[in-house]
Image 1 (cartoon, rainbow, N blue to C red):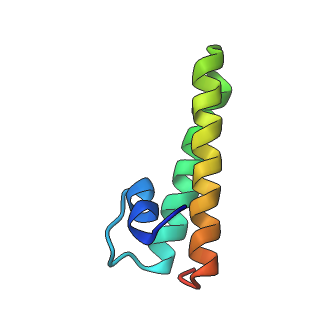
Image 2: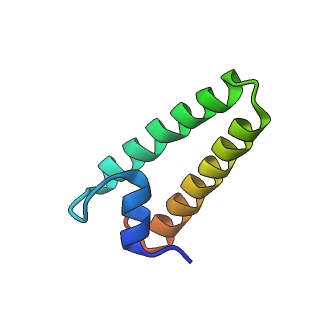
Length: 69
């Protein structure tokens, strides 16, 4: 289960982050992880970054449910 502390940690933000900062960080990490996943030939790395993308989506959903974004 994702907590606010955990979600902010995943995004590497602190508790004072604004909605704009949360969304911007989410989008930046999502693009970065997708690029790494797509450029690697190593299956283990591809799967790891796919899991990171899923984790980011979970964080985004968490903040939407909490009405922070």
